[in-house]
Length: 103
Image 1 (cartoon, one colour):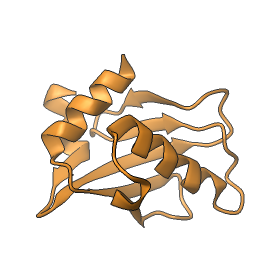
Image 2 (cartoon, one colour):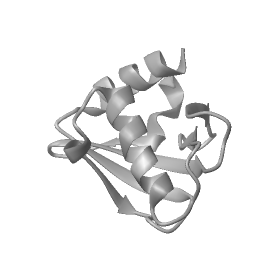
Image 3 (cartoon, one colour):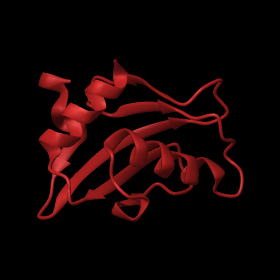
Image 4 (cartoon, helix red, strand yellow):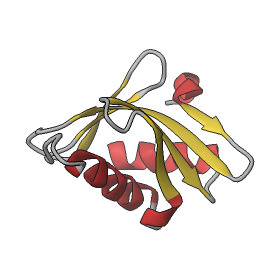
C-alpha cells in the first residue's frame, strides 16, 4: 500500500478509510487497492437492510483487531463508496494490519 496511502487518512484520535464495497461476493476479502488508495472490499452479505454495512464493520473490526464500537461509517451508508472512521488506531497501524490481512 506504500505510495497509495491516500485512502487512509489520519485524524486526531484515529484514521479514516475510503472503501468501495462489493456486496454478495463469494467470500469476505480485501480485493484490491484502487489507484486513488480506496480499498475494494468484497462481502458475502447482500446490500439489503444494512446487512452489508454490518458485515463491513464486522470484517474491519476483525481485520484491524479493534472493537466494533471503534468503527463508524461516516459517509456513504447507502452507497458502495464509503468513508469509515476507526477510532484509537493510527493510520500506520491500520495500513500494517490491512496489508497483513491481504496476505
